[in-house]
Image 1 (tube, rainbow, N blue to C red):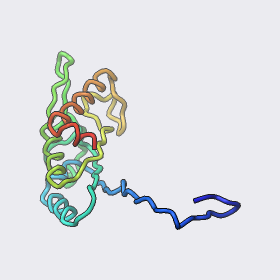
Image 2 (image 1 turned 120 degrees about the vertical axis):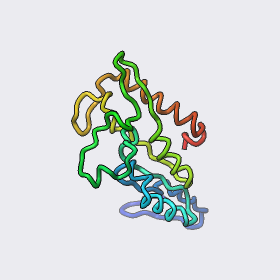
Image 3 (image 1 turned 30 degrees about the vertical axis):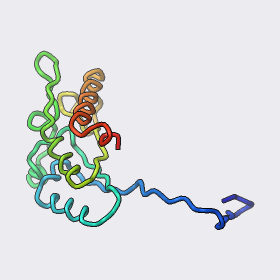
Image 4 (image 1 turned 180 degrees about the vertical axis):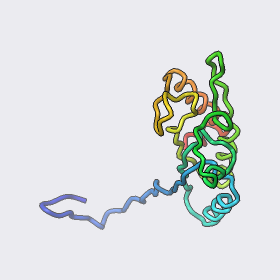
Amino acid sequence: MTLEGDGIDVDFSEEGVPFSHFYSGMGYNNTDFTYTPQYRRMYSYFTSYPSETTYIRMHNILTSHGRGDYYFHEGDDYNGRGEGAACMLTEDDHLEYDWTHVDRVYDILIEHDMKPIVEIERMPADLRDSKKDYPAPADYDLWRTFVKAFVQHLTERYGHDEVAT
């Protein structure tokens, strides 16, 4: 293909290159919806058709509370502290990790041959500098330690090749 003047000339005599559908994906609001009956049916439905791997983008993987769509129905604001948060800061400033809800969600994706687009902007409350919607880490060294532990956990659980995709 060449650009000439105000137009584009295309030479159809040359062999084309297959187009890779890298964008095969979708997203939804809260990670905790993943294991509700409705969303489990959705995953089964989407994966019942032969297609390329679908990527899923969802919010709150690090602040998942484990109560399905409870907060959606109750109208409460979930702030990512305590129950379900992937980590908490102990009194002596050490991080305690709890990957229970992360594993629960990602296991469902893996079970359906789907892959997460990992979104980590919603951080556990103990790592935030404020209660704003999109706060910065209060301590970047702790945040770095946490993210490293998160990636290490995923790699140990699902393997390097899976995490690389």
